[in-house]
Image (cartoon, rainbow over all chains, first blue to last red; front, side, top):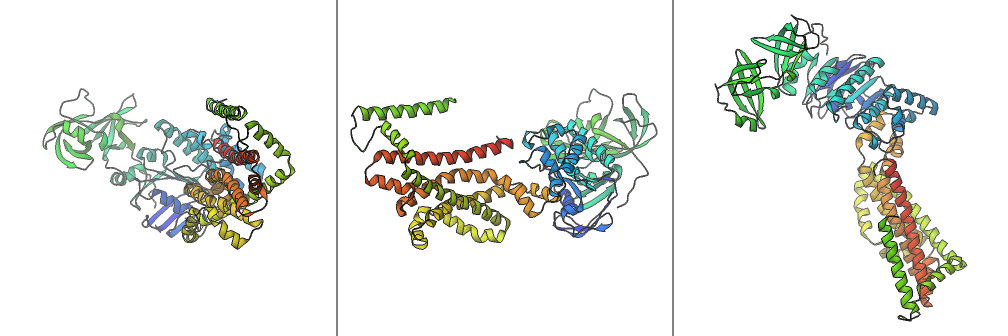
Length: 354
Length: 250
């Protein structure tokens, strides 16, 4: 299997990108729209011009045409050939490479069965659901037995439940086939769930590479500002929740089997912090605080709130803002819904190699 | 039968009855307006007349050769122009200029240049069919998602393979919509060229009928010409519908 190394990659969007993806690793490229994520994939696939070096499996690949880089590519639009049925879509790469009919059929059947789409073989792409189209695009990328798989926001247009199921499936396939994979997304949750490591890019620059917790500050600056706290689990409750102490705030946080006294990093999206003048009925995750500063950000206001000695940042749209009396130094109540708090265990054995 | 088709058949039958009635009842009594039954009987006579069959197939041959050449060369030129930007920039204005000139306006000029021979009607048909095919091939190719080409290349396709496995099939609907209109246009162009310049083919056959005031032959020939145009149109329309249906577009 192949490792990918990018050395000083620059072009009309990218600016001196250096990144190493180990063999069999699943690297997530995370960044906002227009950050240069797709361009980076196109560089690796040899589909766009660049300065610098792409090194695949230790060999400089800059002069290799796309197909000689042995890459499976699932673009954002999926780009299924609309004039071919599912079978011919998947078989395209093998046919073009001149495999015999019997070999093509065997490999196509095997790949399509693995993805559970063999029964769709005679259908045309227009007649497929979003999830089915997704699987066809993945099958087409895998059937040529690539060393590297590039997935460009593959689940962008799907419902959340389907996205979750498919990304687990993709991860499983990636593990099974031991494919070196780059998965591009702008979704923070997706990045955390899928990636072995995450590379955060913004405006053509690589900001940070590492585990989810390592790159949280970069995510916070590139995608949207997060409230990030270091904390420790003080008590695990039976309901999949735990009490976490972050500085002087005690939060009730959803966890997956974490034990007490485990250090965690807690993130709270500023979009989901609720502010009210009246004391909410619910006791937990509700705090009394003071407004420290109000910043007009155009589409929304950023409200900086001080709860005891902790600073929280909350985004509120104009309409809601006008309903609350938010003069500075006003006392208000802050409520943080459980489902928008995320706790991740701090591992100390993360690889931080670039 | 669909109600729309039924209604139109009803109207045709109604017109046919009125036609037959006013001629049979001597409301209109002129050799220049024969009854429908006479026209139909002439039509059947024409279909077995050696002279007519030779004239018809002379025209048919000219249409087929000119049209096929026009389509073939039109598609190739369309692909070349789409592929080479410099070529496109150079040729596009000239082609657009030629496209707006009615082909028949070029007939006198071509009579002088080519001469009055078999090449003249074929070249006229070629001209009238190739230019729209070039434009529709270009616009068909232009509308193809560039991501499809990108993926085909990643999967190992060369430029030539991309052209015939992706670009050409996907521009087919656009090309077919040109063909279905130009096929009928080819018949008309050939027919008029024969009338104005030649001494063979369906156009000339009708010209002779006109000099002998055989209105029944004129009407029967017009019917056959119209049917020929319509059948060509139907052939390409059904191919177009079939393609779009298979791909799930309709």
